[in-house]
Amino acid sequence: MKATVSRKELQDALAIAGGASSVRSSLPTYMSILIRVGDGKLELVGCDGEMWAHASIPAQVGEEGEVCVQQRFLAEIVGALGHDEVRLDHSSGTLVLYCGPSEWKLMSMDTDMFPPVPEVPASSEVRLPMSVLREAIGGVAYAVSEDHTRELLTGVLFHYDGEMLTVVATDTHRLAVCRVEQPGVGSDINVVVPEKALRIIRALPVGDEEEITLRFDDVRLSVNVGTAGVVSQLLNGQFPNWERVVPQEYTRQWTLDRKQFVENLKRMTILARDNSHRVKLTGSGDSVVITAQSGRGEAREEVNVISENGDLDIAFNVRYILDALASMPGDGVKVQITEASRGTVFRPVEKSENQFCVIMPMALN
Image (tube, rainbow, N blue to C red; front, side):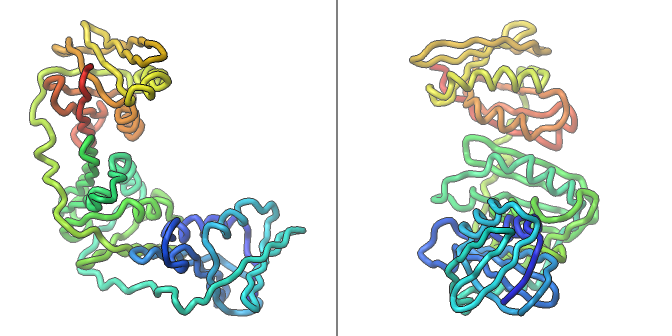
């Protein structure tokens, strides 16, 4: 196998295909990347046993062939190389990379054990502008659980009823929801997609103005944009009834400048991280006082608000608020509260019905 490619294009393709590889696995194949050369292109494929990601780039092909090498090692090398072109040469169990004066030799693996990308006979699909899909995923991905003992919560719910696409994520401490009104863009769906797959889909080489199609069968999701694609197992099970968590009414509301609120909260993290990231918000008239304390000291900030019956004390994990605010558009944010012990809703002032986050409060003391 011999080929010459652009280093930048190779690095970008590795970022997509390598996203499906495992960081740790008892099977070396799942930590490897398949490199296939032929028909004027170099194709990369990564797989962790449940997901496949592939990307192809133009190549000057000297000799067709394929090889597997350790994905993480290859990505680190390509990222560190400094010249425009990379020449790959595989023979006798070794892949050699030439780039300017640099020469790297990587031990290769047999490709026979690498699982082929499965076909997905789609029974349903949804078509969206890429900008809409990226915004929807970005609006909820921060709330995905990292607890793999509750596998279903490590994914994102996609529900489409022919009129509205609703995207939901929760780690039980917070719930993020993004709704997109898109009538007639596909079939009804109700599936849970692994967050790992969505990270790759967001990074696919598709312009924001272009349309992307998500295809589903009973167990898998498939996305193919020509030069790259993803096939992923769906998460099996019944996603929690998230609508029960969303307060149907509120008794207090603060409306704040989002940028100023973020700046105040970021300063609070310096001290709050020593005390379970807890910050206390105290509403009083047309301001909210933000306080944090730990064994190292105390901190106080004040932010102006438009208050509706908002005089109360409530505490939150400051990281959860910052994550929610970072995902929201516009200059303003609404904080809708019922009482200090119940879930509080954070919404952007713009499109406030289509995106929100419910955050469970912490104990005040």
